[in-house]
Image 1 (tube, helix red, strand yellow):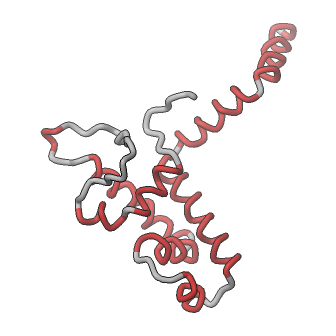
Image 2 (cartoon, rainbow, N blue to C red; image 1 turned 90 degrees about the horizontal axis):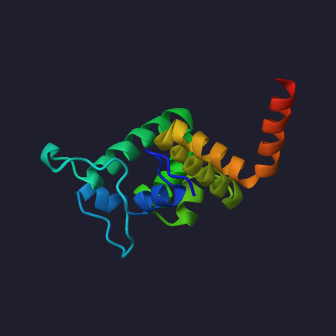
Length: 146
């Protein structure tokens, strides 16, 4: 697997959302998993890794709220200020499949915003890794044309 600087997996973003209350309180997420902080802040700057994660997540949530308000409320009712899904469906006046689709779209949007170009770069590299034969054929055809 290729390492791309600044890339945060969707799994980690979901963990940030699930532990939003802890991030908000300034606590470290401690669920027994080893977590590599995205940018590795220096000790002297006073910004902890958890604080940096919360800042990035809050900025992405703000953009989600402006761009896709329905998905924002699906994410909010599921992770940030959790309520029973039955109650969320009543408040939003939607059926469960619509709510789940809005939640998935919100998670994907947060993933794209937090990662910026790193997400596209990761997909491109994984695509090249998955199809080496196509890449080799492309290189060979370019050599023939040149």
